[in-house]
Length: 486
Image: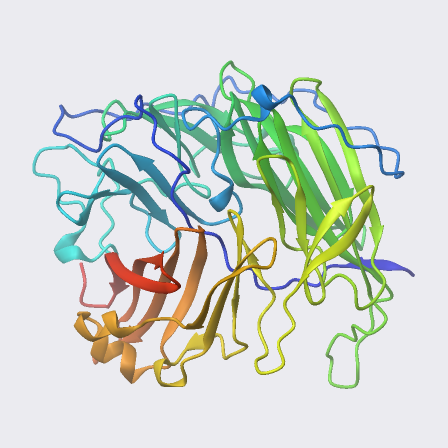
């Protein structure tokens, strides 16, 4: 029986600040009165009839760009694509930026004047987390979000989706939903707006606030009557109003993975999968030689309320290295990773435009970010400083901005330096940026003599100046737990 199998590849998520400042962007956290979170509207929530979009014609259609006024980026209402598929948020504001990472359930605000990050909580005498250890979670702290993906700053308010919704009526009462919450930029006036329910047994993912809508994806995987059922869905939910069940804008029947990029009134999306017989060798390893990579690229136009498919098909071997990374520029040019570099989608075909082949070094496939692609010399997944792997930063036209080892001298002054050097090194959690520089979030872990397990997270900005990267350590966080912690 022919099956679809997804070749899941590790994706280093993108990390960057918003493109520009708005004079209406609110300032960072300031002192304010206490507040109380209200209960979720779990009792009255009902499933709404939102069937999946009809299967579109597989023939790619001609592409028509939006009117420039529609496509123009508005920092007050638009999601930032540089972290649209990341588990991290960096949101620029007056005097600093917000930082939310998957390694910590607290929303932090980096104050540029203080040169440090502080929890987004204005409660008097609140002990956000004890002794700087976020492992001591204080769920009464306003900065504690524990949200699905990351928060959004939208029209002067911080929105986020947490995990504490009511019973999902679309799952026959077997699963819980999520909640849409809102608070002021300083952490005050926190309130629950409504429940958020996926259409079935899946969980919402990559939830982004953009122009009055919440866009996201979901993955459903279950067994029914002995047969596996797998679905990828593109979801949407109005930010305002009483509607709670996410609308299904597009559905892929099979095991797949994808992401979204948001330009103007359009939600661009991509799906990647592998078509072929699922086989294993004598050792139980999956045989991939007979699997053909394939993908779907399209967009939902909110103004038209219509789905458009720009590409739907498989790729000849040696041309596209699976459709698991895609970027959309402000002028709506679509780039994807190819076997040897990056390609551009034109007239329903992906054509390679820049080769990243190198005679002296072997590099990872590019990370795609705002106008740049970032490659790292092929290496163990952890960074070992003495090996000095090469980093290569290029623009989408192939211009090299940087090609040298990543400066790591800043680790010598770190509180955890001895622990980091005694282990294998750092994880590169998130990488992204633009032509002015890149942001890298590092993570490491260690144990102590009491059996405690800890994780450290470091956010570093590398400014790109005259072909050099100048590091600036913005903040560090750590979390951990031992049996003696209470």
